[in-house]
Image (cartoon, rainbow, N blue to C red; front, side, top):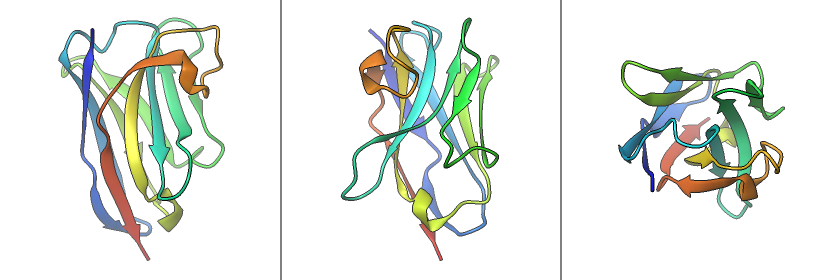
Length: 126
């Protein structure tokens, strides 16, 4: 069992940067096959943002964030980070990290993830 905790959310202006972190309150972030980031905006379904795979698959980004967001792991702190640059109002959402447990599903498919954090709110104002 892995309990994930996100941090770093907040209120920023369009064009600003923000860094989210995902840590394991119990277990290890290196459990399973990788760590993904998803987000859910008000009134919308949760969507894939990015994933970093530990061994196979490398890093994948959603087209909407490619070139602006960077996902990385910090071995010293045992965290996975999501650096978000050039933020837009449409990036406003609750952001979740999730442990990828199945390669059977594509990286963007929620069914491939089991343990989820509680989410952290990111609000981008114009």
